[in-house]
Length: 455
Picture 1 (cartoon, rainbow, N blue to C red):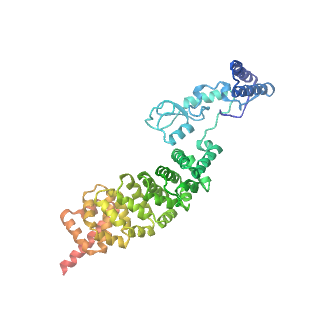
Picture 2: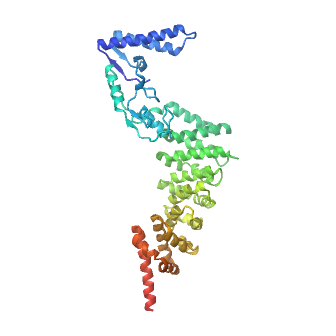
Picture 3: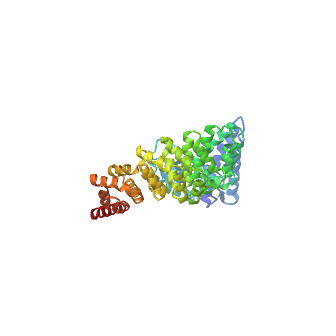
């Protein structure tokens, strides 16, 4: 129960509080006398009330270390989740009132139902319940209790030494039997998904990541696929927390384990490994670490396999990594152009993969491969048929690089322009970057036509 310090009372208020405490004491004593077995909790509460009555008698004040219920706290003033006096009452979509900090924590954990009624919430907007707040304020004034301060971050209050101890016990089980490892890994996966505070706890322990991944060490034999999936998913959950990105990526074991998990395991394991690499690569320093560790080839292999569940996360990871110049070279060396272009030609993840191809078009070898793999007709068709302005912009940007590298490709573009006016239309209606690239190609075509005519 909540505690709010000391209640200073005038004689009339002291008399009222004394009567309430005596009634509660009488009820507790009756329970102790009537019960066959003496309940320690009931006895303890009776002793606390006796102490409170003594304080009122000799000090004229009441220590609210006594549970709030001893002052007959109205039920409607208690939060249904915390069972404590509400500090910042708010109304959810079902009309139920909760303390803001506790219902916010409930929603943050991923719940979309009302804790009291179990109804699905049509929205998650929290509306202040000013009427209940005023009633609580009046009740506090009547009982000479300081109105409770609002809890701004319930997670900080909820994290306790017990939570830290529980995390350490779960990590400790990673060196136990396989059944123990699986049970602990599943619990860690759930906790790191639901509770931001639990993700943050990992940052407090330097050995947390190595302990977590110890069952997946290089010398581990026949790792259970469910265990691997839960551990890799836990790493993904941890990497969402900004303060953990550097911690995870710089652990000597983490990135190699993620890369290995791109190659083997359930498809969810492989997908979540790619998603973890994507999330970790938000930091520029991590992009270098991940690329240098050899992640590009397994990512491209997984993209080429074409698992629907995995491709989007894989494409996002590749895009992020290729922002770094060295990783562009690694991607081209590992066959990125052929893999990506084939997927685009098959109509798979066209918009996302065009963004990667446009990024690679600043690499000389990539441009040469695009020309050799007949990328030009495919890109012209996308400009002509697509409704996505970003895809058109990426296509014309790639064509600009290809044409200036190989003049022979200008013939196909001229034929397209003569037949459909594709480039001219884009020069008038595209994005500012698309217009600039389209006009550059048109100027090139006009210059060549002028030279040919003069000759």
